[in-house]
Amino acid sequence: MFLAQFKNELIKLFGKKRTYIGFGVFILAQVAMLFAFKRGGHFTRAYEHVLEVNGYSVSQFISALTVSLIMLLPQIGMLIPLYVSLVGGDLVAKESEDGTLRMILSRPISRFRLLLVKWLAGFFFSVLLVLMLGGIALGIARIVFPWGGMFVFFPDQAFSVLSPGEGIARFIFAQVFLSVNASVMLSIAFMFSCWNMKPAAATILAVSCLLVSLALQHMPFFDDYQHWFVTYHFEKWLMVFQKPFPWPLIIQEQIILFTISATLFAVGFVAFQVRDIKS
Image (tube, rainbow, N blue to C red):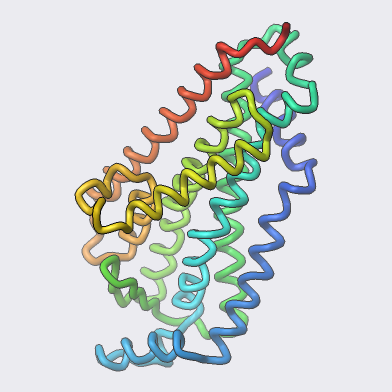
């Protein structure tokens, strides 16, 4: 019965047109970024300059792997939070708005199980969105750029030169980390969706929390408190490209993100449990 209910939630989720907005926007954004990078410009020349200064071949490391990672960065920071929050804010609040939540709860099913199934459906969507984003970025970049080594350069985060085999392995592992990030973003919107509010309000509050966290994190006044902001932990996915591989730090960050997600689910469940829906 649990699997049947989970399947039904997926059918409802992917039966909505708004679910596919993010996938379409990602494709358009990646095509536009690839075109801009191929034409060259200040950003492209800056990457080439860093390679040349450090004694590496531009032709070898301006490759499909390098470009696909560059294409991911702005979309991870701007588009994924928006479209994951859009779905997360709908999961419960939309059912309440449409009046179907009362009918669902009239059946012999606990509120915890209902929320768990809905959260798992949202988690499945988040993982699928991240994997599709990474796969499309790599596929589109491979059409235009040759296969070669991976050059990773993010100030204060990572500087690595990787072979093609090691680069693709790190790229795949990065998708796992990003999926966990997306699940936390979903959990924030899901928590607000469990409260008595409209889907749009839940989405706006979730996005606002992420933006406020990002803004405060980068203010000098909060340098000593950065680890308290969820966006600080989101940025740690870039550690997967460091040499040597920082396993202890990566495991620590994963535990923190899983704990945040579980806490958000628990808060949402408590708020949903005390709601008077059937009266």
